[in-house]
Amino acid sequence: MRHIIAIALMAIGFGGFLAFQVVDGAEAAGGAAHLLVIDDAITPLEANRLSGVIEDAETAGAQLLIVQLSTPGGLLDSTREMVEDIFESRVPVVVYVSPPGARAASAGTFIAAAAHIAAMAPATNIGAASPVGAGGEDLPDTIRSKATQDAAAFLRSIADQRERNADALQDTVLDAASYTADEALELRVVDLKAENINDLLAQLNGMSVKVGGESLTLDTEGIALTAIEQTNVQRFLRFLANPNIAFLLLTIGGIGIVIELFSPGLIGPGAVGVIALTLAFLAFGSLPVNWVGVGLILLAMALFYLEAQAPGIGIFGVSGAVAFLVGAFLLFGNLSFSPSAPPLPDAPSFAISLWIIGGVTALLFASMLITIRAVRQAKATPEYRGPHDPTNLIGMQGTATSDLNPSGTVQVAGEQWSAVSDSGAHLISGESVIVGEVDGLVLKVFKDDIT
Picture 1 (cartoon, rainbow, N blue to C red):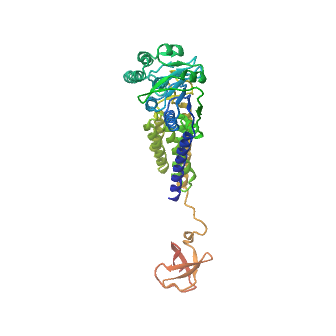
Picture 2: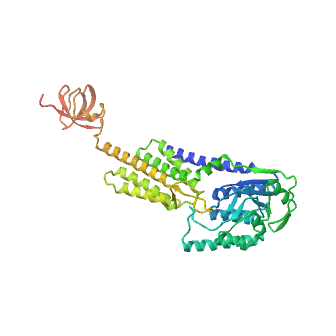
Picture 3: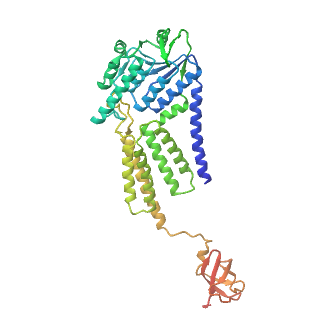
């Protein structure tokens, strides 16, 4: 129990450390204008990061927040959260699609459209916001129709709120339209085209924006700019938010727990298993995970354990292998043979490499076979009894060193033992006796009539 409590406290402490580091990183920011760079897929990690940065900008009394955006797209739920945070922000939010060559595809289109001011650098593009699956695959017709209409209505409502070209933005969803910086500016999809951050700040100076129903005039002349850097913990969380890493952590965690159940008291495998599972579930918070897949993988571990407990049946082992493979397939709803680019330009990939699934499955199955074989051999081996085990004395001859009436002492194998007459008969000191039974450390003896 002490070991379990220690492991639990360690896991809780690790989680508290993460929370402290994230909060500490957010409070470190300051300045009259904050600059946040988002250059990855839109996931819960980015949504949480933007929410914290907006809150920090409000607390610090910043004049504005500039979000430098370059993204291939992301999750619609996370996009909605980011749009809501921008609309609720008490600090003007400027979304700047930059540097040259960057894009605000799919989810990025919604985020840029929601900004108080949207700007683009030369040689950038915005659009291609048609909904697709988590792995970039086309959706079934009915689901695609519903998702497309929902996304189009969402983008129209954003455009109406920001007085942007709703038709042009709607076309990015319905027709997967994409616009260059010049086209987006001409169509009133964005408000500015800026060469760089300095040019952007110069153009923002004197502009009026509505924030919370009030009109604010921006004064960016000579404004101090504070870049919001990622903390080490945020970088670590981004590393965890990789489908392959999350899958490996879940598998390692399950194996560690199973090994601990095989050999209680080892502590090491159990501790590693708990930590790995904690990190896996932490990663799942930033990924479009299918919890049915998680459940099947954990069920597979339980079935492997049952197979080791009842070797020879085989049904638990086979069922575990099937559950593991199906769970891996369903974990993120997609598979890929290589980390190649997703099939659609606006769809970030959340896929597990099939090579990793195959390799992990093979290693897991091989380890389970070795474990089951070892368990079978252990059960088939006669129980070992040490040289000082009293049961080794059964059938040995000894001598009574005191009268047994019915209890006393005897000498057997060169040692003195407490003894009792097996039949209850009186035995005289010096008589030869035979050990018939052992009860704990007391020998039950009877008279050796042969001598």
